[in-house]
Length: 479
View (cartoon, one colour):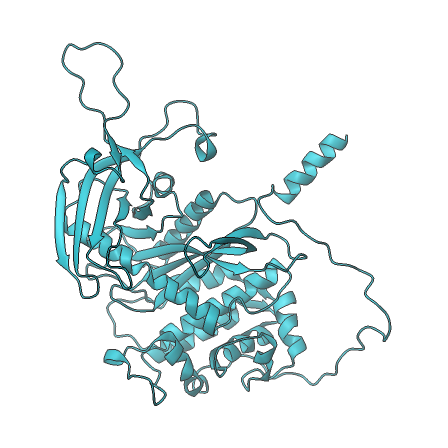
C-alpha cells in the first residue's frame, strides 16, 4: 500500500480509512481480536494503566480471554505493516529532505524471571549519578522527524534487541532496510537530497557511517565530551625519507589548546536558549584499534573515517545557566555555514522522539502489560505503533476537546494526547472491518484443587550467544 502522491491534495479521512483497512489486512490470525484491541487503545478514556481494562471499552466487543489470546496466539504480517508505514506521507524539511531519528527505548521487566531475551537496560534515576541497570527488553525505533518544534514523529520501524545482537550492526541493518522500503515506496528518488540519520551519544556514529557508506544517507551523532579525534597527516616534505605518519595532530574535546581556529563559525539567536554559537572543524577521524567491534576486521590497515566536528554552545538552558557544549560528528566533509546550522538544528529535533516515547508509555500503555513471551510483546508493540500512526493521520480531523483549565492548541496544532481524546468521534465514521464476535462460553479451566505441575523455566539476564549456537557448542563438548 502506498498513499504517496506529492502532486495531489491530501484527503486526511481517506488516508486514515485506507490505513485502518491495511492494518486489518496485516493481521493473519486472531485479526478481529487484535484489531478491536487497537481500537480500544485509541478510544479508551484516560491513560492505559492495565491491559485487561481495555476489554471494558465499548469498542472491544469480546471478552478479556480473547484479548490475551490475540496477543499470545495471534500473528501479524510485520513485513506488510512496515511497507504500509513507509508508504504514508512523511514530514520533510523545507528543502524536501527526510530526517530520520534512531533511538532505543526500554521495556523494563525486572521481576519477569520466566521471560527470555532480557538485557540489562540503562535507566536514569531522579538525581544525578543515580543511573541503574534494570532487566528489560530494549527496542530500537526509527522515526521520521518534523522540521518544527512539535511532539509528533512518524514511526517507521521497531526492532527488539536480543542478547546475542551487536547493537551497531543491527542498527545499520535496520536503517538500511528502512531506506530500501522508503525507496520502493517512492519517498526517496534519485536526485533528492540524501536522507539525514540522527543518533545520540549511545551509538558509535563513525562505525555506522562506515557500514552505511554505500547508501545516500548522512549520519549525524553526538559524541561524548571526553573524546579525542585526529586531523589527517600533514604532507610529506620533499626529499624526506621514512614512513609517512598515519595521523595528524590531536583534537581533544576537553582541551581548547588542541583546537585550532575553526573553519566555520555561525551565530544564531534562539527563543529559548539565547545565542547559539556553532563552530566546525573539517576532516577529523577517530583512532581505531583492533579490539571490540574492530577485532574481526579484515587483515590490513584499519579504515580512516573522516567527518566534520561541530561544537554547539548556547547561553543557557532551562534550569542551567552554564550549560556544557554539545559535540556533534557529521559523516561528510567540506561543510558550509548553511550545513552547520542545518545539522545542529536537526539534532535538536531528535528530542521530539522522546515525546513519542513518553506518549507511548504514559498514555498508550506500551510497557503496561505483563506479557511473558517476547513474541507477544512484539505484537503489542506493533499495535501501539499502528495506533500512534492513526493518531497522526487523524490530526487534521480531530476536534480540540480541551478541558476548562487547558490552553487552546497553538495554531490548531493538537498534541497526540488531545487527538486521542477526540478519536472516538472519528471512530464511528471510519471502516470497521472486524467481524462481530460469535457467542461462546468459557472453557472448564483447571479442575478445582489441582495445582499447576508445569513450572515455567527461568531465563538468565544479559549478553548470551545464540540459542542454536550455544546448543551446538554444548553437544560438541559432550561428544
